[in-house]
Amino acid sequence: MPIFNTSNPFKSSSSSTQSSARRGPPRKNPPSSSNPSRRPQQPPPPSPRLVSLDQLASLTSRLQQLKSSFIQPPTLNFNPKSSTREQPKLEYDKNNAPFHAYDEALTKLLIELDGIDSCGEEEIRLKRKRLVLEVERELERLDGVRKEEYRKQLGGGKREEGKEGETEKEGRRETVANGSQGESQFISTVARVAHTHTL
Image 1 (cartoon, rainbow, N blue to C red):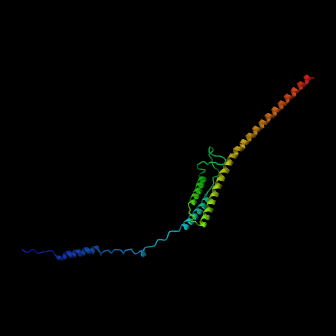
Image 2: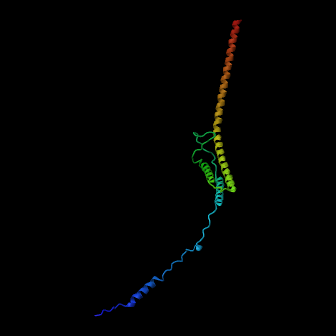
Image 3: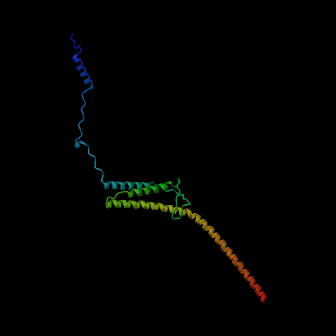
């Protein structure tokens, strides 16, 4: 007995058509960007000369900001054990903190200036030298302020010591004077006794 295929041959094609409709149209691949002319061009890096000039301008601005914002403490606290007249040592405390911070910031500027490449150009070399001298002058000024403040604080003690020294000198002069006077009296007495015996 022959077997007939009772399935609808149009059913599968219809279902596949419906499935394709649900999925939508096939996606198209974006156009290849292999063409180098269509790529965005990156700007060329700045020249070393411009980099050095920008660094100098930035450090100049920082120096002016540091100088304008620094407020010197009314007094400075020194370490009496390690301080000398020529090399006074500041204590690391809250009172001296602004002074220390300013000194360290200026030293850091010098280090950064030392790392700037002059690129063999006289203009960059001169600008860097002028800025280095300005920073060094400010550091020297701070050193002078520190030494002057230390001398002032020592001066009070020296005046007191001077007064005590003058008092001691006066006492020694009085002792010498009294001793001289007593010696003179003794000599006069001996002379009188000798004169009496002679008579």
